[in-house]
Length: 77
Image (cartoon, rainbow, N blue to C red):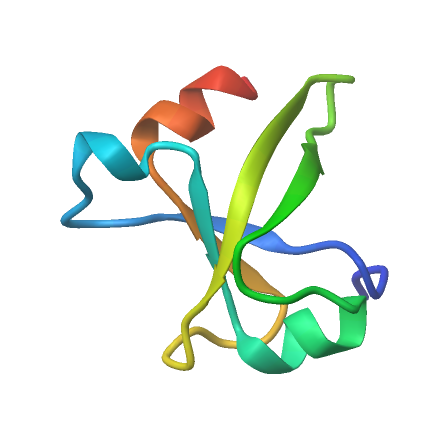
């Protein structure tokens, strides 16, 4: 069972270099967390690494999942 504010990260396909700092979330999960489109969020990884990103909604995602680019994923490893 995940915490209410924890998400599983998936790699986003078809990204452009201008969207490297954008993460996509399910709109229902964003509502649960009190987030809106274009809000700035702090993403915390398991090894005390943090990144700052802009959140956008994507209705095709399953709740508790988040998509980010390969560049962003590499920054939190």
